[in-house]
Length: 586
Image (cartoon, helix red, strand yellow):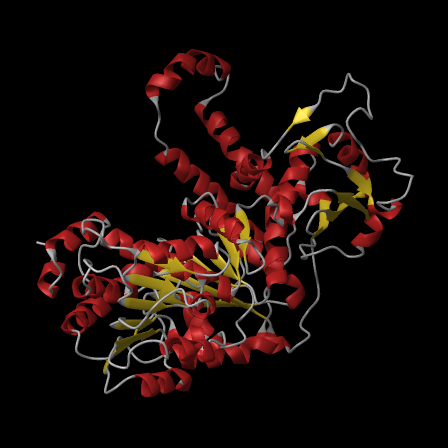
């Protein structure tokens, strides 16, 4: 019997969550569910991300609400649209065997008209971000006079994002006699004030010590020079061939730049930040959940609500400005009782922050050494060998080709065949890491440290302006392109490497991009007679101006010989950008 039955959850719901893989309640679920099912107390639950808080409040709501009535009875407020969508989808999954359960997700970046229509059709549970919820309240499009339960999820993060006044305004539209359930990963003074202002003698449940991190996470840090950060980051990734991680950056610009650099270098990566449209964000998250992305590069705000299983590593490319955000970041791994690693890349000036974070999470960091080049090569080689050992052979499909394969290898010994297969990967990494410098910094060196270097692996290019030409293309964000999509689209049409592309400046209806001088002719040749959704794609030298008469290197239909084959692409860049980014560099 599933132990959720013993907590007081009915069979229909337990059957649904059993299909989702819920075999036993997590500690927060085990202790919170019986208290919340009583429905008589306000509640404060302090627990880390990844411990199962959504089910801890979602399952009791499904037991307590009257679904024969089609008015709002529960309001769940959360900080981000990703978390809003995640919570609403999870509750719908828990309730799949129950009749007439209606949940609406209310968040910015999506059609408010669609959300209003769902509300008018009748809804019992509203999951919302504060900004969009206030907008709907302002339109007098929802009535919260019969709300019985309000859940404040990720309360600390909502306050960090400046939603205090919005929360006050929203809660003022709800009845005084409602019950308020507050969940938070940390308990700063601001969250304590919320509990005092909105609750009456709440039942308080703390899982672990306040503000501490998940005990299943190992915390590592690497001391490197700031200029070597990207090179050290890539080397750490290369030394973990099976990594499936989230990389945190401080700003949206840094997030996009790191993602683009990784894509150019052949990694399965993409960016998630606030400048992306909802459609673009959904596309990135779909690829990440399907594991066709290996690295998700994200800002703190964008990553809230990401609930993806089996994340092996969280990498702090930049430490957070607010040290308590480290707890939220690291909580993206080691979810549901699994283990994970949180890595921080720091320079000598940031060592003090590591000591401060240790106090916040109550757990020491382990200082690690950036692996030397030969160690990375060895890791990659044996990762490939393990894949060969574990690969499933489809005998029915391959048997027809086996005689020719054996004939091709007839003059090679078994040892020679093994050597040659191993060399396919080994040679590439060996060449890349040959004479690679030691990127570690000894804290005893002081701030400057040694600057003896071997092969350069620095992030960015010195003086790239003189080596690059700035071009214009008449496609932009209104065509549903992100900078990563534009990069893939250019490479697809020109067959040049992503490494030949420099800075990409995405605008609304056009984009500027830089390309190595040696590849300029290939770009113009590749975009002769290309259409996108029935519109001629135009590429020009940005220095020649877009409005003048002289466009000696722009192309239109009919501008070249009819012998050149016209290529119809439509929206096909999506397929290519997906395939390119899904092609592993190992």
